[in-house]
Structure formats: C-alpha cells, structure tokens
Length: 407
Image (cartoon, rainbow, N blue to C red; front, side, top):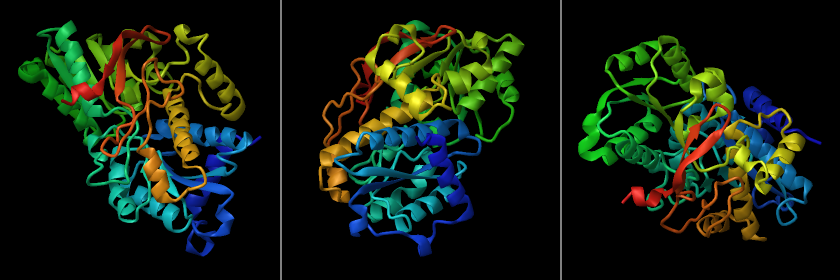
C-alpha cells in the first residue's frame, strides 16, 4: 500500500532538485504510452506560511491512490504529479510550466491559492490546458468568457462576505464591526462582499486593518481593533494567523463575536492551536461536513471517509477540514473524468467539467451539490452558517444559495 505522504514527497524532492526537466519529459500526450494513465498536475504550498493547506493536496493524492486500487477511471490509472510553490506565485508559474511542458499533464487540478492561480491562468488558457477546480474563492477566477479553461470549485469569498453581512444585520443590528483581513485579493474579496451587502449599514464597520501571510505576530492589529470599541470581529486569512488572533484575544480578555472565514475554519489548523476553550462560539460558513460532529456519526459518507483516512491517509488528521476539502474536490474531478469515457482530450475534459448537474459531492452538507454550465464556472454555490461548540461545528441556519447573494 502506498501512502499519500510518500507520493507527495517524491514529487516534492523531484521539484526541489529539478529532476523533472525537458530532458526527462516522458511521453507526449499523443504517445501510446499515455493510454493507460491519466496524468494530472497540481501545485500546492507544501512548505511556507500556508503549509497548513498542504493536506488538501495530500488528501487528493490519497484519493487517487484509492481510485487506482479500485481499477482507476474507465480502466486507466491516475497519476498525480504535485509540486511545492512555497506560497510564491513566481514558483507556482515555474512549476506549472514544468507540469505542462515537461511532465505532459492533461490538466492542472486543484492548485492552491488566489495569487498562485492568477499567476498561471493566462499561460494555461493560451495553451488550452484545463485549469480545473482551483482551490481559491476569488470571483475573478470564475470568468468563463475571458478565461474559458479556468474553473473554480468552492463558494466564492465575496459571496461568503455577503452572507456574513446579512447574518450580522439580522442578529447584531447596529453593533460595531472590526475587520482583520489578509492583505491580498483573497482577503479583499470577502471585505468587498461584506461592505456591499451591508449597504447603508456599512457604517457598522468602525475599523479594519490588514496583515501579511508571513506575519509571526498579530498582537498589534488585535490591540488596534479592540481600541475601536468593536463588538464583532470578522477575520479573513490563513488558519495560522486565525489561531494567533484567537489566542491573543483570550490573553487580553477581548471577546467579540468572532466570524472566521470558511477557508480557515479548521479545527486541526486554527481552533486547536488557538485553544479549543478560546474558540467556543466562533461563527463560520461551511459547505462540507465536519466528520467530528456527533450529528454525522451515523452518516454513510462520514463512515466511508473514516475508512479512507485509516487506509490511505493514516498520517492525516480527521479533524482537518482541508483534508475533507481535498477528498471532496478529487471526487468531483473523478466524476468529470468518468463522464469523459474514452475521450480524454483536453476539449472533452473541459466540456464535461461544464456539464455537472447536481453532482452529490461526497461529504457535502445536505442540500449542497455541484452544478456547472458554459456560463457557470462556480460548481458549489451553497453555504450554511455554523458555530463551534468546543468540539465540532454545528449548524445555526439553513443552506443559503450564494447565487442569490450575487444578484
């Protein structure tokens, strides 16, 4: 049995040492040797400030191992080649070019990060390489008219910000809001959605400040926001910084309503490092199940997930929402490739990616499915508000279709 960590580490070493170059390119896409495998490329932050998200890639590699053990996709084995970009867009572009030009992958799947995906989008679209299910909630990465080969997967951050705005207006009218956001497009999108949906009530925002993903301390920003008199703090950034924020707030005795972006709502990477006792009451939005939620203990998807983790990703943390994300995203890609049948041309892959109809994404919350169309490159459009009770995430509202938030 191959473990996911072993698959990833081979790719990491190869990428770091430059083993996979043009002189070792392997067969081309049209070579008969590719008939028995589907070669997929991905770029992930296996190291660096966003390394907590690397479990997305590790879970995806493990999922494809499972698929291969069950005969592959339409009789073909899946080969995932995944490289580290250290959260550096320039490195992401270099590694993506290597995947396309040297490794001859059929598509790029699930590469992580807003900045990194922006860095490679034009390159992939110019070459008609499917750039599928990117791990970013940036609205600009879902533009089928301008970039018909790039497709997102998760709900958009801007829509998430609008959902939080509606929640705050209904539950905490006229309360003072502070916003702590990552100083890039990822953080900016959610703030934009919040302001848009608050409308005239945007006066509730009394302070906002930023941080960089490389920051090692967040104390100065938290102290500044506390001094504003805010009773609500919306956080949009990485799980490591979220943990620092929650811990410092507990140290200084500041206890606002804490809204945490979905991307960082990981018990393993944010709430546990912050201290579970410091995280009680945190509100977020979810579209995937929390396997640790007692409400899901008899759920068939969760039981299958637990068995998968035990066998294919034993080093993974079952409370890590990023691993859940990777598992569910990989399953969505497998559905697209199965629908392609024997036509695994890039045109066929992209055509079928645009044809998802209420696909029941594994581990998605009830009522949440994936659908796409030629002018709809947002597969998952629903979210549900959840709150952390000290052990798991529990629902505090109905499923919200973010498509209505965008009108």
